[in-house]
Length: 99
Image 1: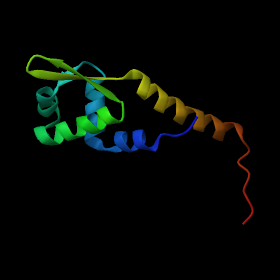
Image 2: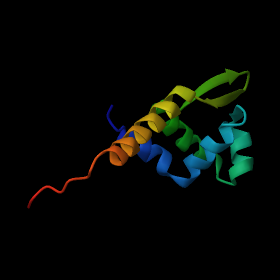
Image 3: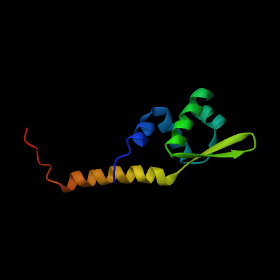
Image 4: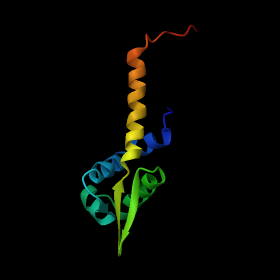
């Protein structure tokens, strides 16, 4: 299992983290996310593009609007990788490599 730095980088941004948090409860369109976050529409759209490219959200066109929803597997993979790293730390003696 390897750590996906791109996914962590994408999730590390405070606005993207807030968007992910909001999408955990329901699928939302850009206008909802603008209203909830107070960010400008172009800013929200750019963050959604990065989240889509990282595979964290999916877009679903609905008439004039596009709704976004989380991809649970992407979050579970990231969480699983971090959890596996934490387990390695707990189960090893943490030897020091000589300088």
